[in-house]
Image (cartoon, rainbow, N blue to C red; front, side, top):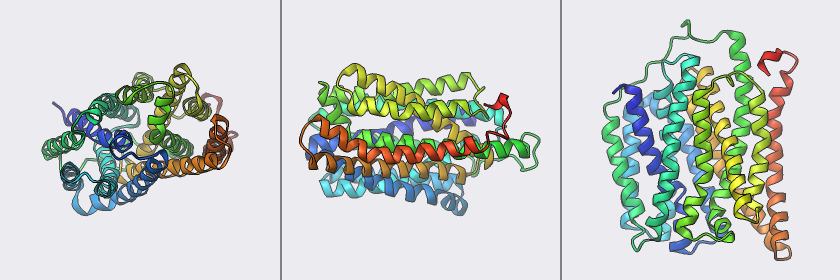
Length: 396
């Protein structure tokens, strides 16, 4: 088994463990602690803030300790945090431990991304990152399918026990990683030329703005999914599985991008994804039927999958697979974790302040999310429009 194949196995198991709590937590707090939508949104906001702290510190941590040692330290701390949750799962302990876990996860992913990307030429990097994305995305629907029954069982603490055991196993597997990933030399023949790097920097800015929008909207939806699924007739276990359709669509997008690399350096796919995000979001949040919500999940998941891949690919090419490239990528994801719940809280407050009913809910959430959608969309479009005159037709 090659080194990169070992990384893919570890990423799959790590993502499964992370998703058990990261996405299953809102079903857990809703059922076990009786958290309302507003409390779940506050919890998600806390998670987003601490995730950004972890992501922005990952580069310094890796530079000081070395990538392998930093990764092992983070994984063992994650295992310990889940043991605390399994032993002392009061609401207060849950809030503190969940915040710590989010910070550790923010620090962990950039290191995995650097190991996977290091030493790859731009053409092979696209396929390497697609394999990486498929590996972690495969685990998300499986994790959500397991999370629902665990939470609905008589012993919901099993959610933490399973994750803690898996993090310990991952740490043992990662102990065989090289101390540091091997990067291409700056003057290497496989590094892009200056003009290509300039175009990729422009696309990186656009993809990052749009990806920030996707994660902001995703984390408006994630804490509200229990109520959205209940509204269209699902129980707890079925709701967790149904909410994973978004992740299945994202996974299918990753598979398609593995098979097709013609999107590298082109603007049109980014433009299409920018337009698809708000439409898919509106269908999930406001859809009155199973068909509309499912359609929205598929559309949103596909667009989010492309933007995630594009932002990570362009970052790793431009910054030569450094931990710092992944750190900035994950920090934007964490910012989305924070902005999404903030918008959800504002939308909930606006809806409660108006007359009761679906119309007030739609109005409140629209007023809260439209400014964020507009800001991220305009931020993503600006570099594309600014470079229009300098871009040849084959790159559009």
